[in-house]
Image 1 (cartoon, rainbow, N blue to C red):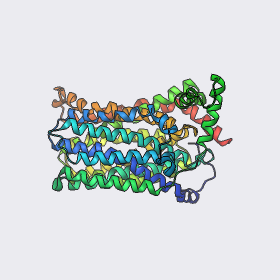
Image 2 (cartoon, one colour; image 1 turned 45 degrees about the vertical axis):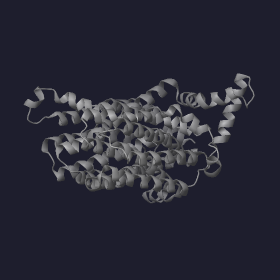
Image 3 (cartoon, rainbow, N blue to C red; image 1 turned 180 degrees about the vertical axis):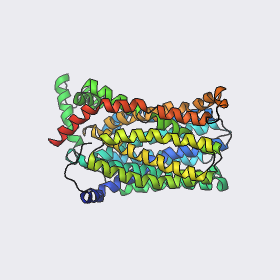
Image 4 (cartoon, rainbow, N blue to C red; image 1 turned 90 degrees about the horizontal axis):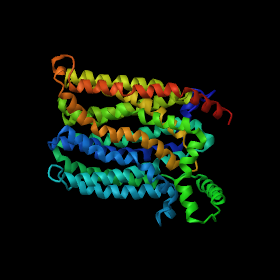
Length: 464
């Protein structure tokens, strides 16, 4: 998170040649793909099936599992899966298990019709979300375990590869889905998506399990708790205490209760505006007048290319100058870019404006995300990396997935304002995007309030 002194641009570029970053990229693809599978793809399918904006928004409530995956993250940290663990290691075994579940559910969704069996489609999508949320725990822990405490200067690079991988897994399959949806139908699209899941499984078999001191650190924690509880180290009570209590206790002990609570509040607020925008973006594009093919080309393909380029640029800047300024500048830019959607709501289906909006939105989002992911990783301890990162990420997901489920209802509610229809430069969609801009302001105030703590963290790392 801190500034990296005396590092030139050449050294910064060479730092991206680490092979471990390739593993992070491949698993990032696996992390982003389910969001497309049950997110934008499903929104497009439900819209074409005739469901209302409110219904589509509420369908997104299945993403609530991403906001509570910290509850079972300790199990992913500690439980060794039979057979799979011996063959693939702690992190990859959990990833392979969840991907196998997603493969089965994707094939089943391909045989459903949400206009007649919405409950079945919802159940299968929920199962994918549950498996995906569990997969994210293991993937985030994999990334953190791949780089030791002495390699914190590589956090922006690892964050960049994770973000690029996420958007690659989200955007490229989404591009193929939307450009083919009108010809082969959404059922055919989901058969194709099942093939992508199979490819992700091959990726997981290809990457190498990271070496870590996790077992030794957890054993030390068990020894401490065994003494406190006057129990033997093999005691079930000690195991459960270390598994459930210690990851959260260590986080608050390391940061202090007041600062820890402030950090958690900041994480929750930072991307709430972007989340509301993202949930309704596909519905908005369709209502403005863009076709599935146009959405696929601009939002998915071009959006992916812009994200890759801007993520690399953003991470290089963070490597050179730190992420504190990146959080503040990125947050301001991310909020301001939402106003371009408000303009597009007034102009209509103009492809040039669509292109400009996608480029600006992806630039600001990539810059802010790199700083955000680097910051979360910096706050995570190494003994319980899966649990602590899941706790932090789930708070961001709470706003991104759970609260944003009401985004469709918010647009419908705004549409009822009679006074708005009398203002020529304002309509329900443009007013909605203005609100998403305002939602970012509290988190920007939080960044300013946390600057003193950020400075202490920087000084502490320089002394290591």
